[in-house]
Length: 230
Image (cartoon, rainbow, N blue to C red; front, top):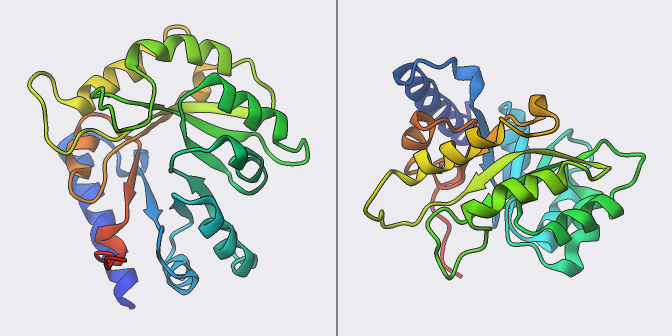
């Protein structure tokens, strides 16, 4: 078994243990491998170990990898900040986009998604801690965005994505606050069966996120190792 395969099994075991602690089936949490700044060969090796879903932060870097991995049935997720001039590439080359925080971006993705492709899965990014330097909409904006985005063709609104502050603030746990917003939407979402994804938790805090209801954890360092400074 390769080092990457071992790392993946260790993460899956952490997910399983966290689900057991929370009295949840392990299959209710998906592992998204964050492969930014990783070579295509590393992605290929992890795919051979059974990993299907990969998350990228930079459009051009992701497109270069996709070009040499066309023989693999990878599920590509975009998790970085979205530039308006990159929405056409996102609409054409990704299966999921996690970082939608404005209706305009969702409208562009819907309009630019080919009808020959399956609907593009979207998550609304929420700035759960109100950090000035971080993207995402405020929690109070989520209901209105859900109502508007749910009407768009060619996209499928799936849930929320959050990245809590590195230093915790006073008050309720940010993962629990995100889960409360997620559950609030269930009462009015036009297609509630599609509202099934709470994307939160990374290498250092995935157990905390799963305890709060995460259904997808985004793990890079614990899989690939620490990235060298560039």
